[in-house]
Length: 116
Image 1 (cartoon, rainbow, N blue to C red):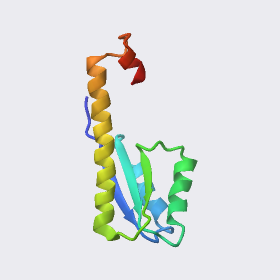
Image 2: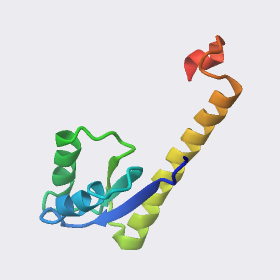
Image 3: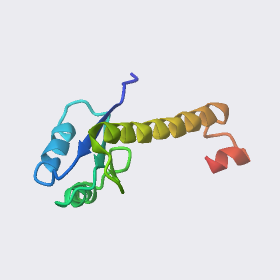
């Protein structure tokens, strides 16, 4: 059965004390196909370090927990849009790879398939 993937965009600013709890609430859901994109808006309290600690502790791949750290202040709406841009970019890459697999199934010996 194909399930829809849920991706949460989590804007953060000076949320070091609460960000790990917020991420854990998503991780503890029963639905298995989720991802989180944390967009840090130039926090000064160690928020990116707290997120990176979770990525390292749980050995999270980028499609599960992604941290984006702004280099300039963008505020909430711009942070959500930044996260959505990342999701769209990932979806484009995935759909391109899926189309390649349809044209050249994994058992096909072609030079193009070897690059995928």
